[in-house]
Length: 307
Image (tube, rainbow, N blue to C red; front, side, top):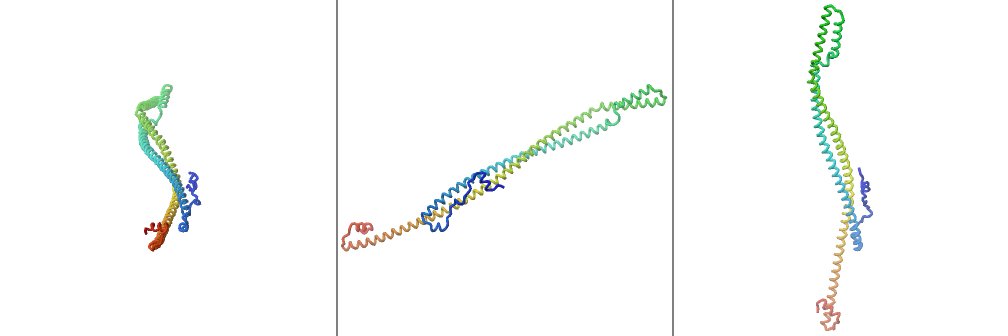
């Protein structure tokens, strides 16, 4: 699991230093002078802008990481689809292989059955029968036998010749067997080809499966980094928002002070006008009583509209 510090180091992120933040207490807000508040507003604005820039950079990094996560997930999905496609082909070749092996087994069973019917695997071979016949004929020609022994020997020779003829006839009639064996071997060979395809495709499917697992693992790692980057973004954005809120509060307080000053100036002007009016009325009264007015007095009367 990646940590926030590791993400900061890996992506060369500027860490947020709390010491650079600007604080605003209620006492500062309520009792600070206008000049102090204007200075504090500038500090809050500048720090807010710094933090917004920091948050923007972190958000950009987070978005890049989320995009890379999606790319890895898409890559994993592509490997999954290819793996599934190959596994379907594996199953198809397995089914065909099993079908052909079953057919080959049936054909080889037929071969064995036909061999049994022909008895090619039992009894003496042609060469053995020939040798036995030659030995019996040699005895017949070289030995002096009585009639009974001669007759038995001739019967043995005839029996051997009959078995030899049957053996030769069966061997001559093995074309059906040969064709059956050839067909069985061809089917078995075709089954072997499908088995080879099963092995090849299964290996490729396993490769795509491994690549899918690796892509998902990388996606998880990048997603963890994106989550940490989002936390860093939230940290900077919340600090920026707090500075903005304090900046707005100071601006509001400055407007209140401006309004208060304006009201005070207005009151001063009204008070001054009232004083000028009273003074002008006194001058006017003197004028009515016949006193001589100087230029300044006349200007005061004109200003108040009494002249």
